[in-house]
Length: 226
Image 1 (cartoon, helix red, strand yellow):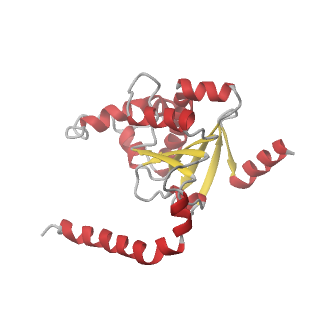
Image 2 (cartoon, helix red, strand yellow; image 1 turned 45 degrees about the vertical axis):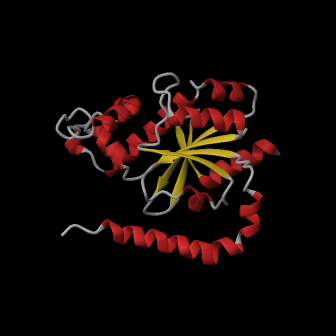
Image 3 (tube, rainbow, N blue to C red; image 1 turned 120 degrees about the vertical axis):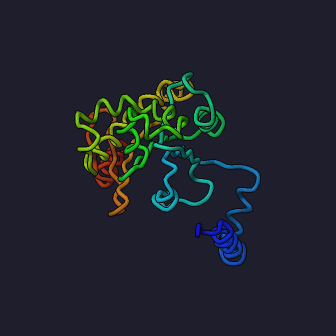
């Protein structure tokens, strides 16, 4: 017998009750301050994967991150697929004045695994929308692998996820709002890779195409402010 959908809804509503009774009262002043406006400093673009919690990873409070989530943390090039992602980027940069944009991929990403098999018509027979969406990551696939799909393992998925992050940063720069803010020195872009199993974040340097630990990235940023 299939699980009853009502069971999971009960769990969600019980969580809402706990929030109302325990969490909100201890953060009431914060929520009241956010009732009429928001001033996030960062646009955080990440995967829809349920294992990713941007606020938990960054230890931020409500109101600090403007979050965009989609399958594969993809940013379509400007004009190619105008919609929710493009409008969120434009709004975050021009209306909210965010100072940073982070594109965060992750380990064992289902979207990256699907991208490896994008030429397999049988796997996408019932998911044409997913296949079309992943088209905005095709160049990452070409850059990351020269293996047959059946040879792909965790290392290949990670390599593809990292190349996809670099690609989406490139796509971000095609958005007029982003290009303008970068040119004025008002916006910085960053790529992150989150390893679910060990909780570590690796920072991807878009200029050198190399990776840094969080500690190394912090040291570099602090030195630039000295």
